[in-house]
Length: 300
Image (cartoon, rainbow, N blue to C red; front, side, top):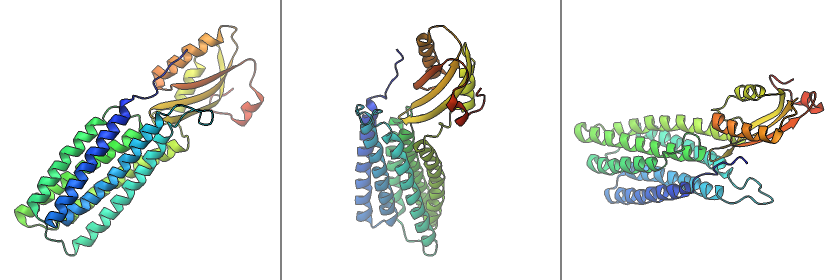
């Protein structure tokens, strides 16, 4: 029988470490902001707290994804990893909007900001966020939940870098307008990334074909198999956590061993396309009655 990996157990451990590390840094940054009366540090701490909430959502989704299937939830709770990045993206969009609004408001009267404290604490933020992103580096390219958290951390590192540069400019030249300018630019960068994540998360929640797959290429591959004359009722969607499901009906005029054929094809779909939850139905003879209601390219 075809087997597949249902996600590494250390995923939840990585999310736990990342969430707790960022929460500790947020508390430190907020405390230092209050101590120095730095609005820049306090606003960044608020932004980081929102990110901690987003990372907490990703952590919770990773925990839920490990729950065993039940009679009611036959796929388990893996789709929680699709809902988490949707909420994560909305949080990012909201914070980038708030960051941009505050930056525009400050252009009129840039406040006096202590350059050295901002540079020191923001520099620590770069190390914390890049270190946390490194913990989530594996699998973020095909796991939307990890990708959402990874983007959060990289965006935070960019915010911290911008704060370091702004602090340096303020310290060296007294350019207080650098603070709102860098905040505005970083807000735009975050918003662009957030909208891309929001689009992908929405597509996944609507059972769209994953963007890294070409549906016609998969269908053409099925039609190349021995004895297959038609493919219909083919659907491809993400189950979350790097798992991709597919259903397909194949008309196959072949008296060979269909079980062995399906088993070989399931392995091939996994190796070639990463489709690790295929459900394949073999039909004999001409096209079925329902074929004309779900006709796809190349269908007979």
